[in-house]
Length: 286
Image (cartoon, rainbow, N blue to C red):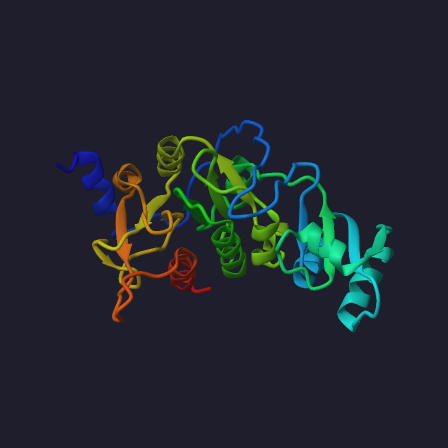
């Protein structure tokens, strides 16, 4: 049975607030040490690495690198530029045999370049909301996501589309690993990623600040491009193959679906997230 409060929120959805919400007051506990996932080698907080030319370049530009590794031998122009930029920043550049770089990457494609990063720091949600006050931020909350490559792909899309942040529930999200970094192609250097606590408390707190919560669900009430995605918005994406959990779905103000006209019944979660994120950006005229 729909409560009066839920009914009022759905009625208000027809005329969303014009990006008005007060400053947040949100505290976070220190994130736990990251563990391996999806075949990644273990990553410690003080030894997180990224691999691949684009990723290394973006982290260099964001001043997030401690040391650069380049494969020994003949170098193409892009590898030479990476080495030169690192040296210009006063960073050590070490040339190592390609087989050692392979072992260091643990299966991640490195393209002859790797970087030891400064300890990864989750962003503070309070600060993110403060930076976006008076605007219409898009937040993406990941409910039960498991594959670190999907995490990287979603972070990359969110950064490209101008979203405010990706929210990772502490106990229901993959860790930030080398594979996630590689897939994101440097987006982790720019997009705030916030580690949050309980999903219910997080969503209820954001609703109090004026956010609408939309879930991606195969049985959603409307098609994603017909829904009103304006105003401060939280897009909730579920786990691969499982979708948004039933408990989290009840916390959503409404759910949307993506039309499936082929024989395959679902999209990869990172592709589905991209459709919703860019639809929300389009409705903002961006």
